[in-house]
Image (cartoon, rainbow, N blue to C red):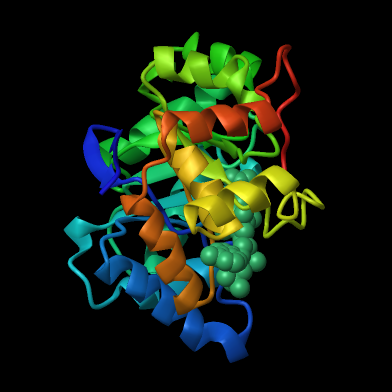
Length: 282
Ligand SMILES: NC(=O)c1ccc[n+]([C@@H]2O[C@H](COP(=O)([O-])OP(=O)(O)OC[C@H]3O[C@@H](n4cnc5c(N)ncnc54)[C@H](OP(=O)(O)O)[C@@H]3O)[C@@H](O)[C@H]2O)c1
């Protein structure tokens, strides 16, 4: 199984995304089944946020993880920028923990950079750590300059993760952000690894190179997109699915290695950027 050294833990190199989950009563059961299928077949990391359905995703995750040993899971949630300050963070984290029905988060992320001075957010994250409510903290949607500003603050180097958009059709982070994070021992989480099933990049799933290579390897295009990310060091994809069948397909990628010549062909069809691109934020 492909694994990643993630904040000093070895985890399977596939997580579960949960944006939009828990919002539709008619698909709730299959969403829970899909998450549980993932957990029962080795997935440990689950990503959610107070923003997702204003807590409905966290509630769904709380229900889905209820039968399992908490210590075998790695739960990530995120705080809104306007709550990432000394006035509101403790209330936010308490609400998140209550919805998840757990007493700690493995990772708490600053969802995107707001107006609170970084040092105030950092010191509040550190306080939540000292209270045992979170094990570690990180950021999301921080570009290279944001990371530099963060790491120059006192305790800024305690940041362990940056969660950013990354898929084969959008490799902007490969220019400077990914190398900068790797140099500073910060793991990356790849969100929208399937480009939201092609919705945020029309034509990606029909790209002739992807169609040809996936046929050659007997994979779906979705699996090929995940495998591409998993072949890269220091980054874990967190696809979302509400379907057990799709979860099964996604899990299979953990045991598939792409040969070097396939990675070369993908690099040729989807070249890494040759100059700094602004970070895409969804
Ligand atoms: N930090 C941030 O700002 C941020 C922003 C966006 C997302 N995120 C996180 O990243 C996660 C993933 O991103 P995302 O949910 O936006 O999009 P995504 O994972 O790229 O795509 C999700 C879509 O792919 C489909 N899908 C999944 N597996 C499939 C398979 N094997 N075959 C066919 N279709 C498949 C899903 O449909 P089915 O349900 O039918 O399978 C769903 O429509 C989110 O859920 C969230 O946790 C974070």
